[in-house]
Length: 249
Image (cartoon, rainbow, N blue to C red; front, side, top):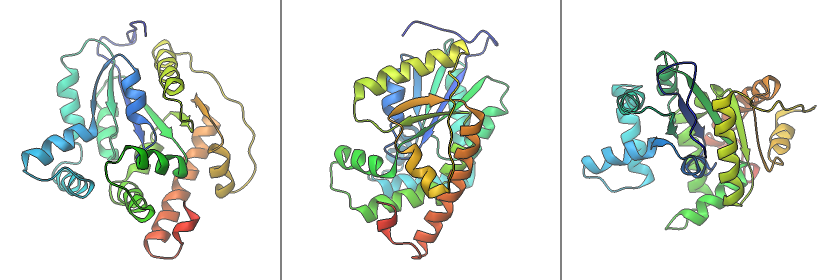
């Protein structure tokens, strides 16, 4: 990817990638030839510092402990790192909206990209990458942890750009990521015209059919915020045992 700078400010732009586990955030981040830090790296460093085993339960517990002490602790670390950068910077995977809000209020140019993949697609990706088999129940617990406990959907609601990623081709995703970053830095994101009529369950099925595309369409952003509210309510009902797992996977 050719080198591009943000012309609106002498401070480097920060592009924040948010999405559920398995949405493809890291694949997108790795495709972009810019400095970056992943939320999970910051958390794993703290897990290791505390002498704990590196697993989902410990990472989640440490994350919640740190958030209770300082909700924007990751954003503050990111800004310390970015102060030494001249080019745009990627912050991959924050799950706490306080981090994003802190960055948005920092005076820097911030773009928040919400990456969406269908739940079934994400589950299949997580199955492939995990060293140990993961059950549907374990995967759904991660969904609940991310959305209900950590507030991930509140991060996704702050997105002004959405990337829909429901393909398995890493090559295609990487090329799309490069095109997305160039569009962000050049300020020429493509406008998306779409027509949808129906409820949120139908909308979920609708966006799950998008193979690979990105947009900052105002209408899509509004619809995604409505969908994220609905999804959060669905997960709360699942957590209470009111909706069976078959409704999700």
